[in-house]
Length: 67
Image (cartoon, rainbow, N blue to C red; front, top):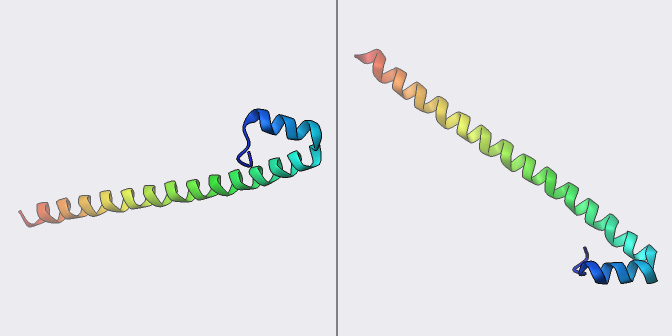
């Protein structure tokens, strides 16, 4: 967190707990944003896969209806 090693964070927490908790809070906000971003990316990817599958099925069905 905050580019600190676990030991450095521990030392900061021992000497200045307010600063350590400020870094922790900032890290939590970052993780929440990342989680939302990844969720959106997965949802978009899933939607694209569904669209590709439906287009493939549509093209197969269209070919079969002409035979």
